[in-house]
Structures are given as structure tokens and as C-alpha cells.
Length: 110
Image 1 (cartoon, rainbow, N blue to C red):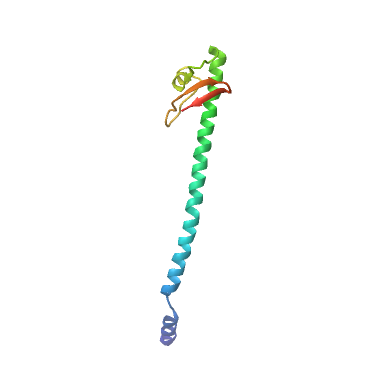
Image 2 (cartoon, rainbow, N blue to C red):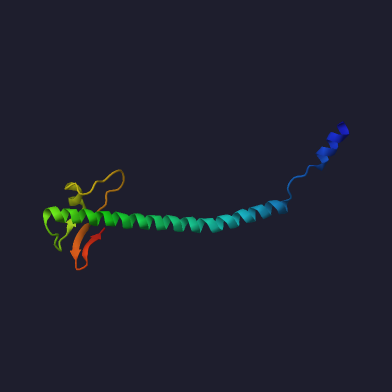
């Protein structure tokens, strides 16, 4: 019985240095490919969030214009839209800037 246990103990071998290095290289390649892809996803999400926020502010300015008359070239500030309750700011940063009327319609400038 002791001989069998000793034989089993001798047969067990660990990983060689080459095998460990191969695994490290493979993991490095996976990380090198994944990080830029994740960075692009985050950048795209931030851009889409800013576009949606801008559209929301312009829509609020349209409602403001309906109730208060045409917005001139001087525009209306985001703060005025919030104070007039056309925009609601929840947790997070309060947007700033103004909405002005251009030849193409209303335009938001942060």
C-alpha cells in the first residue's frame, strides 16, 4: 500500500515554466484585445448619452417656446428651463448652457 502511494506521489508533476509563460502570454493577448474594445463601448455610450441629453433640452425649449413665445437669438438658458419646470434635474450634474434659435431651428450650446 505504501509503495502505491509513493508511486502516485512521484507521478504527480507541476506545470513547467514554459507552460506557465504560455498561459501568461495568452492572457496578455486577450487583455490587449479586450481593453480597446471596452474603451470604444464606453466612449460610444457617453456620446449617445450627451446626444440624448441635448435632444431633451431642445425639446424642453420647444415647450418653453410654446408657453412663453418665440425664443429669439438671445436664447434661453438651461437654468431658466429648470426654474420654469420644463426640465427636471435628478441626481448628478446639472447641465448648463443655452438654447438659441438659428436658421435651422433650435440649437443647444453646452
